[in-house]
Image 1 (cartoon, rainbow, N blue to C red):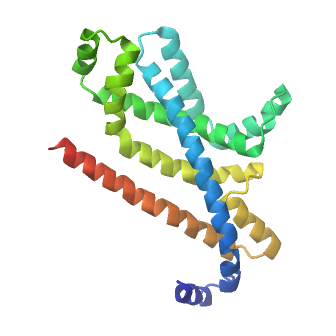
Image 2 (cartoon, rainbow, N blue to C red; image 1 turned 30 degrees about the vertical axis):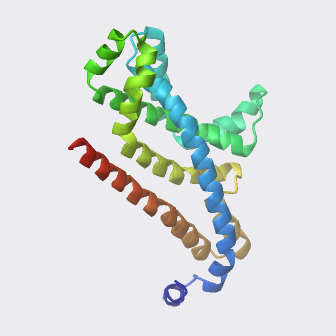
Image 3 (cartoon, helix red, strand yellow; image 1 turned 135 degrees about the horizontal axis):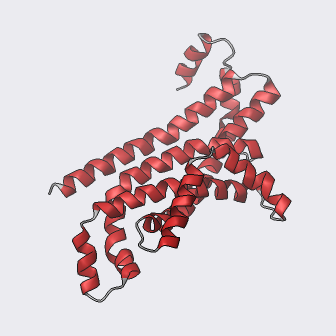
Length: 232
């Protein structure tokens, strides 16, 4: 890798190999923060996604309407605006959140809308006879969803959830605007202190690739395994 960086540095003005090596520990810490934020956000997103995904196909008008409005509101506005509303706008209402919590909340709320549509598709992919069979055994609607439908739905949409995790990981870079020291923020700090943009920003890109490529391969593997199991 060092030889590659030396060769790369010799052919690109502004790339400082020694600077890159010196900032690797900081980039690594930023990458860990990015992963931490993404994990907490995807957990929140899944919880919200299940709630609104079930709501999207509910026969209850209020529940279905709330879920639809939430999804349209989140998907129809930029994530950056949502982040700034939560971090800068909520204090005007007397709600003060630290940057990390605000970031997780913003990403989780955003992800929940997209996961909601994924969960909805997963539920609809389960044969309707499964619900009828569960109800015939004495289960109510939510018991049938919890024990019969949702486990099968999650299995069907696992690759899509994996892709959503990767998207969320990359979108977490937007949190640099609220001073969370995640991966992009680290790169920007180095750029500001060294007046060298190429080195830290290419380093940031490299670390994102080191995180997303293995995750993408894992998603592809899960998808292939799912197809094999489904086809018997």
